[in-house]
Length: 132
Image 1 (tube, rainbow, N blue to C red):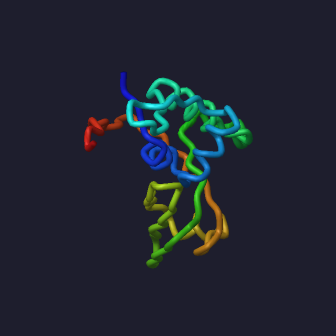
Image 2 (cartoon, rainbow, N blue to C red):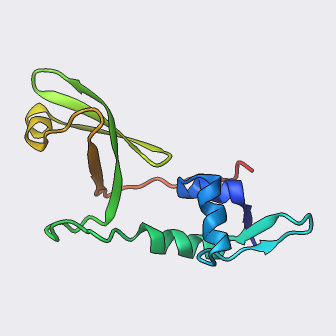
């Protein structure tokens, strides 16, 4: 059984340690004590919580079949004559999108504005995260 300490869970969820502690204290996220007395969150419980928390209450227009939506803040925009690169920080994740300059202008994107990266891909590479 995989378990995570509060700090590890916070990193995986993209929130602060204090936020995870409040969720545990409020009973929203179950946790037990490990043999050292530290709070430990079961991996399956953390995955279920992440799934439930990740459900976007505003799924958008409903005109898209994409379900992978990351809300974040625009941190950089590099424009040239035809294309633009938009960097979005979504929790702990940096998402970089190449799009037409026209699309950036039509969306009114600027550094500091919020944006939703909608990811639709035919290939996703997944690697083990065993860095603990």
